[in-house]
Image 1 (tube, one colour):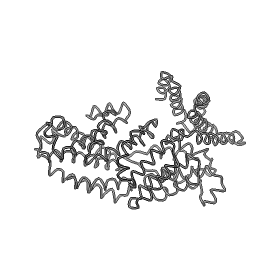
Image 2 (cartoon, one colour):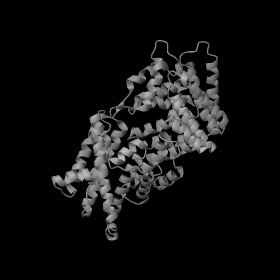
Image 3 (tube, helix red, strand yellow):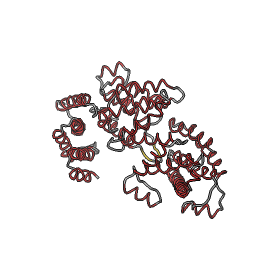
Image 4 (cartoon, one colour):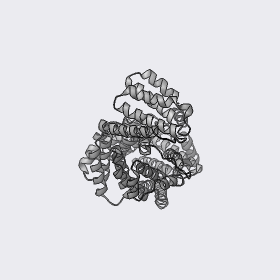
Length: 486
């Protein structure tokens, strides 16, 4: 059963990387086969008992060691199968995925209950460490994943029997990562993804880099030329502001293997951003262009990024590259995806911004690459480098002057001014110039009634103002301001 689970896991990773329907079908077939294998080794139950177990969770009972491993493998396959089902674009796929996740979680809870009542003698068995590692990874991953939901949704999930305790999730994953079991690397990678990506994209960018370095160190020493080790080393360097070192690691990662081109694409994404932080727009364009041509994850975002980066270059440079910025922006809407029947928020944002180019007389976006840098929380990253933050501030001040001298302001004129004020405020806050940053944020907030298109500006600027008050040490005021955002 471990061979079946391992093989289907690899196919699932490939499907997640390529988004190719053939790869997704192959992964689903393999997961169904793996589930069938696991079911053969599980303890046999009658129909009524199976229904009771599905609804109330499985009851504690004595299982053989092989049956215990069958349970944990079954939970793992069900979780992976549900994750793949979520990629179906229908509401039916979403419901089926949710039911699969619940079934998986119930089995993980059952396995955790079994683990808690085992005797010390049973825990000394040679393969028990792998069972314990599976429990840690499953319970940890579920708790960590669910803790990201808004409080209102989390309460509903807890009512349905799930748990969303972030500290418990991290503790379980640490336990799984630190023991020498089959799933140690998976627990490690889950924590790395949480600290290095999820906290940056969905949070305030305060991932634990020291812990990440500790988690990665034994694997980096054992596999110094391993593509994933090089990639995560580069990502840690990015979040520390060591962009040149990060670029070296991403290029080494690309050179390390050719079989999975999608790992190259992860590196292209990171290289695009590190060069954007440096405002090396030609190099940033190079990697955005590669992504738009080679990768299927989000063509709308790649084409928008490519056009946004080109917008930062002088027109003559764009002509030399043989690109048409207007034509690129006009493609964005037609390239959008839907996952579980829902639009992807970043794609929706990009399509909304690109609307300005759909008319016969397009209205040029102001600093669109820097605005997208904010969308991906990049100012928190580039803020580690005061020199580069000051360079971005200079670019924003030049754009501000150009807007002021515009003789025929468009209907987007005030919105563009407010975009610049928000981004200026972020730079000034990262440079410690808090009073000037606050003035920029207040300028945007006071313009609420006059903003016509970019409705996101006021709530997001208010949120950033709340973080500024927190930085000043006025936590009560920060809470009041952030509550008003909701």
